[in-house]
Length: 372
Ligand code: ATP
Image 1: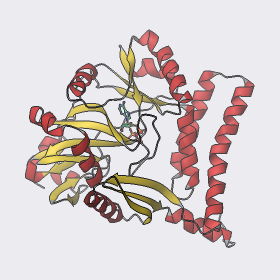
Image 2: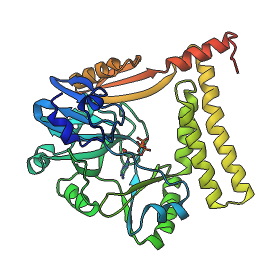
Image 3: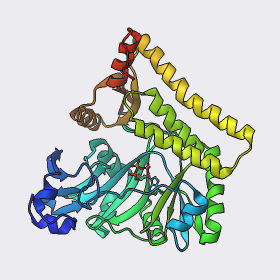
């Protein structure tokens, strides 16, 4: 990679080789690019360099999580903050590097998300006016290749734009400016609960969390008005959903994933200081979200059924082919369960086969032992 990109990436490393060795060469639809799969030397995970377009597309920063609102909010924010809904989908950055491309969190061009973004968002108008910006969005809904959370207003999938940043520096637009800009281009956005002074913010977050929890929604992202400081906080139902997901694939999802979800739940329960009955109810729900999905998966393997993540995608036939190739290129083993046409679109239901879970469970069911 050209050394001029080293300076522009503003890394903490002194030697270009120390940073560049961590970049991977990738290509998509004729565009070659370099991507950084993990954060290195002060450069965010998912950062991409498209040399032909002379473009750097900075990774989206990791958002710290608050575990105790009462103390966490004032320790992270020293002034007013905006409370926005956190949606459960997957993160994409859309930037014009030659043409508009949608990059996943780890820096892959996703052919499906790129095609959907070009169709569902007026990107030409946006990038003509703001060529150096990137649109940071969540693709949500029951029909996406990566997540499946249901939202009442979303039948298949939809974008929600939660940020606009300079693509090279990663500097964000202030929240209010971004909300106005997105409204001007008809980009849908996550709900904003309001702007609060620090004294009122904790109660406002609890109110929002109670409503979101009742609706099985994920949580909130708190943002300083200039959008430089961010923090996230999530609902009980989200913790249980994620545990259920992890334990439905017990040998594919890491132990850290599981532990961090239980810790979130522990601190939330302690801070809410709920009575004994409510504590026991939470404990029962938590236990159910661990045991029930795992037992279902063991039974499925025993019955010879395919276990893994089920997804449905719809779009034009070529885009769906490109997506399936893209997923297989990442060494995912896919099983197609249905492939049909609806209203001129191709609809494919597939499973990302959880091979470790399948093989491990099979082994134990046949009498295999564990060293522990
Ligand atoms: P990390 O942020 O530590 O990398 P992660 O990738 O697992 O962790 P999450 O814990 O899901 O991410 O939380 C951060 C993500 O939440 C963002 O990357 C973004 O995709 C998503 N998100 C959803 N709604 C919003 C919003 N309103 N503002 C900012 N991010 C949002």
